[in-house]
Length: 381
Image (cartoon, rainbow, N blue to C red; front, side, top):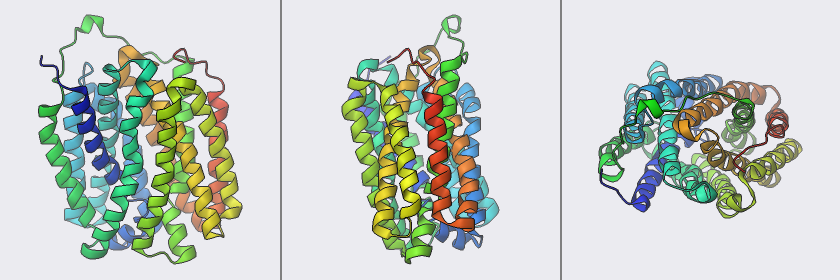
């Protein structure tokens, strides 16, 4: 098997994941516009988002089929193909039922690609420096808002809500075709040496905490576009700029993990991030009536959230090293379940009592996650 450059592979996976995260994240600030284009309510738009998130539960089945025997390249190409079809179906049909199918396919593809990309890098990097390498990949989460959201806002304003879905659908197809020329081919694995994945107390606790902190973030994040539209009359362009602020905050959190997590410990960074998240959400509740204070509090929560999730991924990559992609797939499930619940509850809370209700529920979720994490004693740190 030809050994290919790790640097080139990381660059390719980073570029591909930027498209993946753009497709995932531009929907949040523009959910009201997309819902209007489909002729549905914001609550029904939340159901689309929930369907996308809940689809994450199928990730282990996809990993077990397309990614069987820890096959990274095959899993990545299957995932990119599903996302391409999902985005194009959403754009081409322009109706609620078509969008539902498209969002489910997007929800099936994203965590599968994430697991493949994260495992590919983890396989080739030492744990002592892994947070630094994997944080490069995670910078694309903020990049999906920093680059993707303003572009999506421009496309929606000029060509309609379908335009961003057409663009990412084509880009997914291109990256799927290019992947085998950049990434190393999958090595056959001796099944007699394949590790069985069992869930002990530590592994369960990390999954439960991930579900809780993703629920906390999603409950507030899903309505931030509606909060800015309803409360402050933001236009599509202004929503794109607000998304840029959030992305810069998230990039700050990702940079903090890149700089410090390997030195001070991934588990410790997770705990610090959760504590800061809980405080940030609690501050956001009374600050939501003020645009400057509300945006500052929201940005602070997402610095903390990014520290949490970006530290969790390299920590999880060594919790079950013999079944790495399978455990990371379960992590994607936990994150998806948390997001799915937040996608349903978030719009309901916002309609009922506005952003303060969302923020307070998010704070409780972050505190619950921290409580679970404090029961961990990870062997990897």
